[in-house]
Length: 395
Image (tube, rainbow, N blue to C red; front, side, top):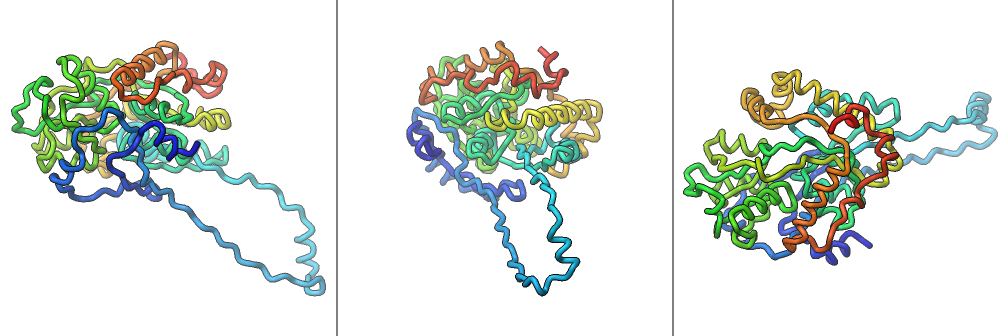
């Protein structure tokens, strides 16, 4: 079934298209956003949640033209031409491309900046293309469309992707970090606790970790998602709206947290500690996992090296990132002080926790159908083929 028809069947629709350019791995966003327009367009959302399909992600296509060669008659052929034509032309394998999600922070940024993945894959006749997306749901939509091979997201986007029949599989997970997401409120906001969210405009990326921790925080106060005015905005648009005073609460991650605190636009009310107990995930398509386990292994090995370098070189890491994110080195070092490191294997316990999250989304009426997380899990033999020993030993 086509993706569009599948989305109609699952009642998944994006409230606001995000125009992206994959060619230069840069997200093209409006420099300003009319707050009144946002308020008019993003009212209390319907019961069913979307996967936030990034329908406007554009994949550039190169059109290759060939010059027609002039045919020579037999009489025009020189001995040299005749000799060259008689030689057998060797079959040269065509280079393949590994498309990886682009990140401006952390180990993925280190890999991209240092070119280590490209160097390691050159021997396997693979090149690397880094593609940037606003958030996890958009990246997984690209994975579903066959235009991305490796995605990095929090726990919830893969669940919603599975609900939309995306043929993804879980590669590895990370140690969870409750400080990786926070609830921002305007600097002079009267909001003192989550209980004050009732009736307020709360912005978050649909089907993301921000959505999940908001749901958990509201539950702790005996509130429901319907008790707040949900503004389903991707981070770049929410950033503009927050700066213009159009949002009461913004549930978001780094570097947006530090940027807004630095600019005295907002303050952190609470973070995600105590609201989650599972880390992020690296995923790929089932087809890619089956066809290229050797490439996945190289990716994971290089990621481990990048993590090790990052932990040992915090100053250099911050210097490497500063140009991309527009944040000074001391502030980046503060951001990295909150980081946790280490990839973990996909175990039965990980699958169990992920299933509990999927069941929670379904119980809330936010998934159109039940999701079996195991549908995105490979066999032990398949994991063994690409999982480095250093990950296998982590628990």
